[in-house]
Length: 110
Image (tube, rainbow, N blue to C red; front, side, top):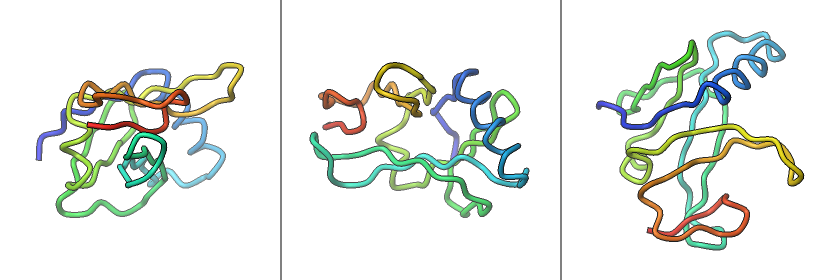
């Protein structure tokens, strides 16, 4: 499966720093979609050592990003970034497939 999801340099740097703390270089950042949230779907992030057979695998800036096959259609063409502001620090998704997003940016509708 060819991935159309991108990882920003800022997000990759944050992942590298987190992996140094974990001391587990085999971890990969997994982004996924779940039902719920203000707008219908929510973004989720976790670290994972396992790559499923149907995962999209994105390797950018020295970091591996995984997207499961069910989440991929919702994330095709999206960019995962990392931001720090007055609301805190978090991974964020700029998603061209989202018809609407909530104020916090953690959920979306298609």
